[in-house]
Image (cartoon, rainbow, N blue to C red; front, side, top):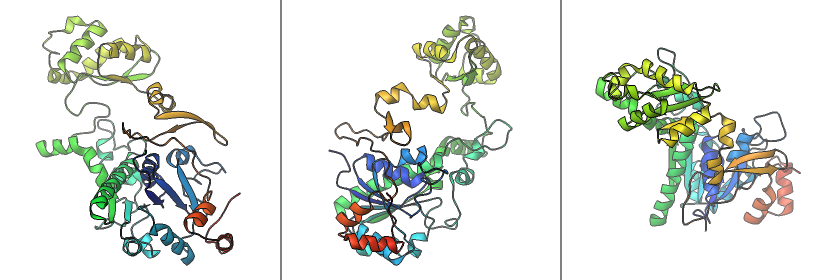
Length: 398
């Protein structure tokens, strides 16, 4: 049995925040019906190719696709019919868009009082900033993340990847699960909100503590410790690749000295405590890097981990995609896709010991499930469906 078997989700989301939320639900066994505009969801058509890019493929496994023009009255009527027997609707349009289309929460709950309506936004559905355009980059800036990212005495920098989008999607997913549990007790649906800027706030926990203690924000430190820990950094190796290591406890420093052959520093008052080493951080880093420069990265990591020293290689994306550990756990798996070729796709990072999680099924083609959803679920005839296509309400593809 899969944990969300029997749950039907109407998914109107796009880009990363919403699709990741619905991906997690699909991989837990929910039936996810992805409702796309006639031209397809934005990420599907992001590249000038008939084949969707890998980011779309990753986030849309195990979903069905129907096309629907919500700017037409018949389009919104079909959406309302889908909602009637749905458990969850997820959208991440700008605030007010769904209301203007006549399919906002207040309207849809009249049709289905048990509906869990989930809205992912940048700033929330209320408040003075609700209408600001929100992208991962802009929320990183507005939410304080860029102010703590970057080199010492350098300008603020954007954190790599799109962490805010995925934080927002993760919290939206958690909110939906809470609402499903509550509905099981009360029988009532609800509106679930997750704002990216609010999801980001807890990432600042250590920096907020510094402001509370000192009254000011700590300077940006690049890859240096913000907690006066040394060693704590990035070190180049013989093969010009990098690793990181740290000594969060004195036993780690003692092991490092043994590994790098500097037992002569053991007991030296200049290096005997974390704070003393922090005062001589550059000297400490030079001592360690003198050793790492003698070894290729993977060899150095093997030695450090053998001695249980907190360390890791700085791997590039292609290395992470082929990570033996995640492949062995079934998180990542190679597939032969008929159009994309050899690809690596992820499963959900959530595992439940007593329940099965879904096996990966390739992303759907645009409108692939128009016929089955409109006919089997809504009872529309072939003639009805043909009429909808002629009127530009749906679009089917061969």
